[in-house]
Length: 333
Image 1: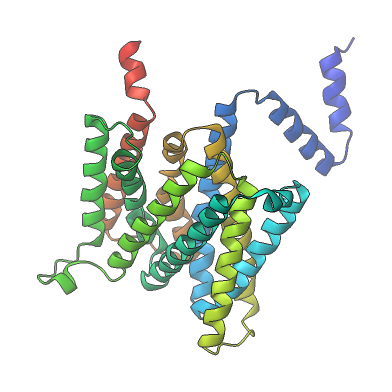
Image 2 (image 1 turned 45 degrees about the vertical axis):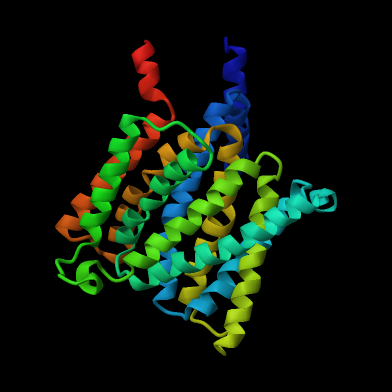
């Protein structure tokens, strides 16, 4: 005689495959009572999505101008963000925004324009996207330091060791052996550094205000500003809307993963867990990009860059685990 649980399983298995998938997903999410589990799930989803952004954006930028790329990339991202906001009935928040919140959205929009522009310029300049990703580990270092000096968060010895490792690794990745400041680092290092500073500023603003503004609204605000900016630059440079189909495919996939899925997921992770805990998962991004770059472009960093990249990942992971308080818990136990 079958138990009630067996009957439920059999009932699911008799459904069409798509229905089975959504039914099981619904059951899994119903079982996720803990906000912590949800937070880590969204952080992992954001990390996987962000990792693929490096791959698909690099593939597209190999074929089209940066402004052409921006128009299509953020048009798709804005469309998906708008549909998602309407579906979740978040557009009504626009009528209830205070003057202070409007100023925050404008400030975030300007920061995102500067941050995203420098991000894609660095991807366009540096041949191997995994190297760009490893250098991007300067960002969580700056977020941590910004949290200490601006948000007055605590900073211990283990975090300091993690910061030191990440910076040493970044130096190893970018060092060329040159003797002058111009030839000391690989091309694009300065752009990545500026991007990390700008991204840190945007993240600190989001960390403070994400509880008051919905992730859907923040995502839509970001993509809308970037689309407007891309259109302005598109007409300034006099580019054409005609682009190769292969580039459009890569842009479509990357735009859904990046401006939409990754951004919404990371904002949702911040609403369920602390930003430092979300950063633990996101610190593994470089490894995913490394694998993706090898499979897609058949590229692999030089030995010193690979070693430096692994050191940055280890440093960021150590820093964020310590920031999340895991070492304090082990001492208490």
